[in-house]
Image (tube, rainbow, N blue to C red):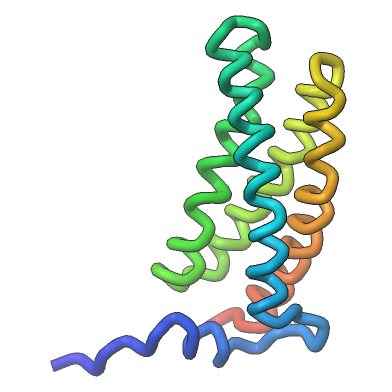
Length: 138
């Protein structure tokens, strides 16, 4: 019988990480602040696109970002696939830049409200890439 898999918290705790890695509680708090902004702004974009008041091409990066953001946790902590999680977070980061550029001329307030999300995901991307590199071959 195979040994039971260690819980994800223990697995993540066992990974080599940069010294500047934020505490899990800090990471959770940041997401608790960002998610309401994401829900409101993404919802606004999707509703405006559904009402044909915004071209669907503007909503496309928001949709891709939402999917990439939602699959990060299962990839990272379920599958424990660091390289795939690194690729996924690069998609999240790239689509935030695309979102800001796409929506700017239509609703600058939506674009500006994504800046904290962009800053956090940029930091998280560097962190994820560092963790992936530090744990290569694992």
